[in-house]
Length: 90
Image 1: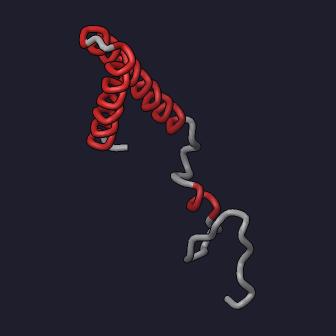
Image 2 (image 1 turned 60 degrees about the vertical axis):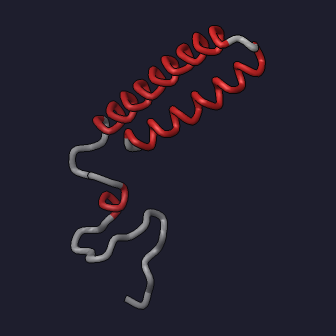
């Protein structure tokens, strides 16, 4: 996910959260504090998700870059999908 998409989503969620919090509490100060706490928690969650994706990418075998390439037979020109048999009309 790109940062721009994440940022737009973050702002949208925070605006919706702030509006809802204001209608529930009727307090600008409480709305501001809770929205800042929500923003920090969302940022921590995003950071942990990116950290997990980087960690998971580092655990892949060195030879295969993706599943389609890993399933490709030696000398096979076209990429094959895993679990799909070859056509007899080749």
